[in-house]
Length: 161
Image (cartoon, rainbow, N blue to C red):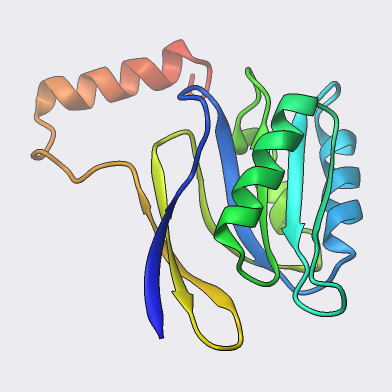
């Protein structure tokens, strides 16, 4: 077995969700849940088929996000994994529960705009995702000023009142 890291290639401001599912139906079901949850959502989704033709299956509503999804899914190359890129102005917090509710979705590895490295194990059979490195290591513990900043920030962007 060989362990590899695959860096997610994307613009800095783009959010994505990386997960694992168990059936090709994932592609259509995630598409349907997204367009039903957020009017006008822009996204690209790619799914690594783990049997049959073993193709990267894809869908979406935005050409740029679709291309990002296909490129990154192919680079990860882990069976039954999916990657969902959200267009500018769309965030995982608005769709994550809907995606998790899709019956085929078995696991979410991350939902972020951070730089991410995917830890992939490669065997003679194929590849599997072990986990992710999401962002950077902590530089310390927040103080009272940091607590106040966090609380104000969440209220400023409308997630708390």
